Structures are given as C-alpha cells and as structure tokens.
Image 1 (cartoon, rainbow, N blue to C red):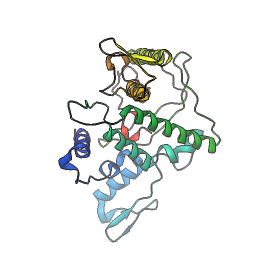
Image 2: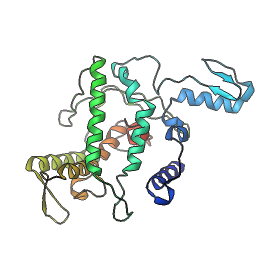
Image 3: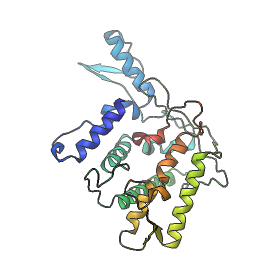
Image 4: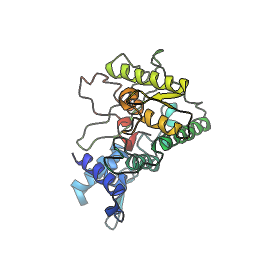
Length: 279
C-alpha cells in the first residue's frame, strides 16, 4: 500500500508541528503515472531497462545523463472530441497538484478534535474552491465554443460525455475509460446519493439543518456556508454526517465507476476517484 503510505506521510508532515521544516517532493514527482500519459511512462520504463541500447524515437533525446521525453498532458496530442478542447486545463499538472495538496490540507476524514487539528472554515473553503474551479472551467469552455456545463439529472438519465484518460497504474492496469453517452442506472450508491441530495436541498430551502441529536441549526447565520460546505463534502466535522452523508465523495465514486456501477467485474478506480486526477 505505498499509495496509502505516501498520503499518510504527506498529511502528517503538513499538519504536525515537529515536521513543519520538512519539504516533500511534489506529487507529480512521487507518482508521475498519475500526471502524464501511459505512453510517456512506457518510454521511461524502456529507457530504464534498455539503457544505452534504447532506440531514440518520437523526439526522445539525451544530454549528459538526462533523458527528455516529450509529453503533452495526459491525453492525446490531437482533440478527437469537443470536450478535449479544454484538456489543457482539466489535465494540467499544476491544477491537479493543487487539488491534491488541497485535499491533504483539509482531509475530509479527519476529526479536528481527535487529531487536534484546526480546520478554519473548512466547509466554506471547500465550497469556494469548487466554485472557483467550476467558474474557471466554464470560462475555458466558453473560450473554446463549448457552451456552459450542462446540468446532470438522474431522473432524466442524462447521458455524459465519453472520456479516455490515457493513464495507467503502476501495476500495468489501465485507468477505465467512460464510453460516450454513458448513463447511470439504479443501484444502491445512486439511491444513497439521491437521498443525500434531497436532504441537502431541503436544508437549503428550509434554511436550517438537523444536528445529530435532532436540534435545528440555522444556515442563515455567519457560519452557514461553512456548515453547508462540510455537509456537501461529507467531512468528519459535518453537523450530521449520518443524515446528510458525503454527496461530493460518493458522486466521485459513481462517476468514476460508471462502467461497473455494481462493482461486479473488478474494474479499477476511475480518474475521479483519485485526488491527483479528479479535476
């Protein structure tokens, strides 16, 4: 479980006072296979195995002891689908690294009291960050003539655009693709997501939420947006996680596993199920 170790170490270093002077390598240096396409990773493997016997092709060259491998984001070099026009943003190494760091700074699973961590306005910052990412993504779409993001609905079985990530796990297994026009069918997870969504909508419409002990707390107070953000993400400090759930995280799982919604065929986790590849 090297991935779990790297994540745990990174979170610990970021939050422990006795580790504040430690400098960790960037996530794209630790796990390059999550940030560049499988073609680039394959060339790196071949260079490592063949050494001086490697046949320099496709722009690969060497100076002194450094090999240079051309790589263009994680997808193909040419856009074959309109959605790929904005791949320079969605697959940008810096944006995905930012998303990785953000989720290490504010781990959704961490109990602030148990771990003695202070997550100042975690829910508000979650809401703000997601809003800013969506706003920038929308601007990039408009700049490329794609129009605004279309709303998704389970009730109307809205089809979603296809996506082929061109990424590969360290063990050689490919990240699953999402076929064009994929639809979501009734499953336990989708039913749970619909229930969480309905409860959050009701809380917004009513202007208050229910705590774990059944008390009403207004969303119109100063910290209302903070409570709402924690409810949507499903952080441990949510006002009532058992009732309002973790809509954001469960939706990432549903979309990431659209080709195997019932987890019957052992399909690997999709790009939306990793912080490093979820933007």
